Image 1 (cartoon, rainbow, N blue to C red):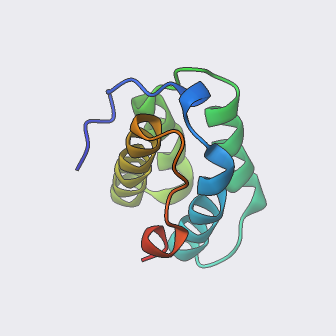
Image 2: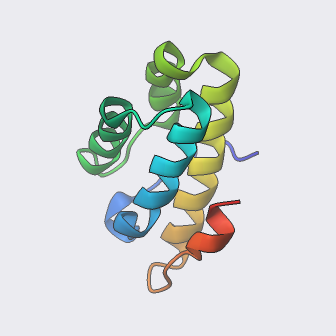
Image 3: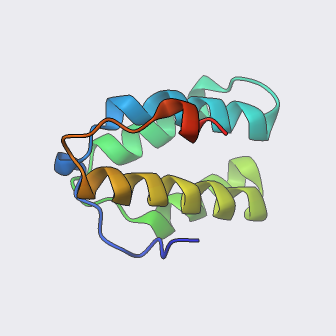
Length: 98
């Protein structure tokens, strides 16, 4: 799992391409589509050029429990770091959905 303390520059990430994955994962974890939690994550990532993964994880613990929050943020950070390294490439959503 990725170190969520690694810096991600959201200006280098096509976050729109990752939104379906975020929505799908949160829905799987909670068992329902919770727009409040999903929008909280979108807001957190879109409103800060260099979001803090640890802070996001702490915020999400209240909604997802500790282990699911840790796992989700770790996977999200993997995708964000990958997208940052290859800004011209869209992430393969099919791969992300698994």
